[in-house]
Image 1: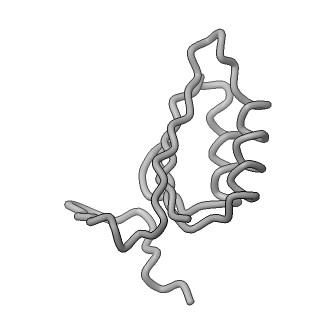
Image 2: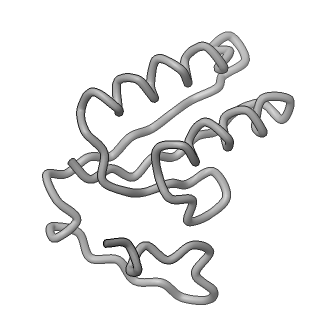
Length: 88
C-alpha cells in the first residue's frame, strides 16, 4: 500500500516522531512522509507513534492511503527534499 503521512505534534516530541517516521517512509517535507508500506508495518508505525503522541496536547497523525502511487499525481514546485525515484 502507498501512504502519505502528515503529523502535527508538540515541539518537544518532533525529533522522536521524525526519527520514527524515517524508519518506515521517505521524508518529503517538514512533517510529511510518503512511500510503500505493508499493512503490518503501518500498524507497527501507528502503535509506535501513539506512544510518542500526547492527544491531550492536540497532537495528530493523518494517513492517506492508496493501493498504489499510480493512482496519485504528484507535482513538485521548488526543491524536492527527498527523491523516491531512485529506489529499486
